[in-house]
Structures are given as C-alpha cells and as structure tokens.
Length: 136
Image (cartoon, rainbow, N blue to C red; front, side, top):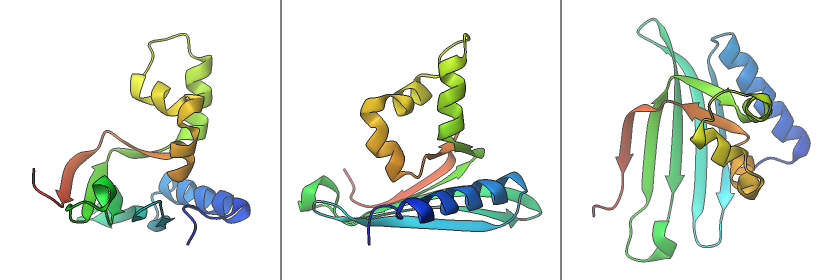
C-alpha cells in the first residue's frame, strides 16, 4: 500500500473529508503504508458522540526507532477541528499578523513531504491525547 493515494484518489479523499467535516457529517479517512523499516498508518474520523460532533486523529507505527527493541506505537488525539493545510498555508503567507510557528513549520517547503504524508490535513489543538507503546 502506498503512503498516500495516487493523485486523483488523493484529491478525492481530501475533498470528501473536508466537505464532510464542514457539514458535520460522519467520515473516516485512512491512509499509510510501508516505510523504510516499518508500517505506518494514519486516520482521521468525524463522528457524533453524545450529541456533539468530534474529530479524532489516529496514528500507528509498527516499528519506531528503526526496529530496535521498541514495540509498536499507537496514538489518538481528539481535535478542535480538521484543518486544510493547503488553505491555511496560503492564508499564512498572505497574513501580516502574528506567525503561527507550528503552521509556519508545516508550510515550509522543506517539510512538504511530511505534509503530503498527512494528506495536507492537520488536527488543530489536540486534546485527550492517548498513546500506547514502549515505556521510557
């Protein structure tokens, strides 16, 4: 499985998730694939829980730290919102106001591959972070 869908499917997946999110409709979007030494998966989900709309971001890495002794790592964050990084990066570039440093890092051309791996989406203000994996 490739790390992200091919171009047409990529655009269709992004548009579907953003449209469903804007309308507060349930959706799920899962992507990932083999990396150099592990399997990575990411997902974002919009759903209703106890009468309120919620967005969650999930991540999985089968072999963090290059397949040393580390167990797989799984994480989940509840998000304030799902942000379209394409639109946010354009707005940030035109803004004369204060710079959002986290967004500026994501919008930097050196990080383009990482942003594309996330389908140009971002979980804003993650809360209720949960993770499972190796203990330090």
